[in-house]
Image (cartoon, rainbow, N blue to C red; front, top):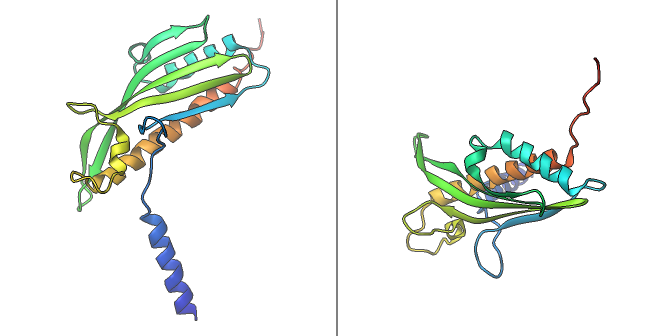
Length: 178
């Protein structure tokens, strides 16, 4: 009986470990899209905007090159950035496989903000939306695409967590110790 339970549990752990990862895809455009509206009760638009700009300056290595548009009056920031993706061969040797570029748009209103991450693409000679990595029936499909999806999900999960934490947390009040 214990052997059967052990065999079944090993089977399910194998299935879960090798389940195909996916990326969020817009139903209308069929392209990768990540978006969310985050409530920040009691915070003013200007405060949220300033917190997001402080986060951008910490999160990105070249924030001035990343930010394309910033408008404190309308509460909008638009930026373009990219990150590296790698693959590992059968021996575990890691190799550089290119860059994933994206556009991030942040909008702020009193008590909430919205982020949209669009145009998520593998930098190639022509536009290559990362959602194509999920098409296992494509004649050009590669096993490495699953690793790319994992790296992309991991990068954006970290970005979302850090962004929400930074924008939702008011700056520490400075002590007036003159």
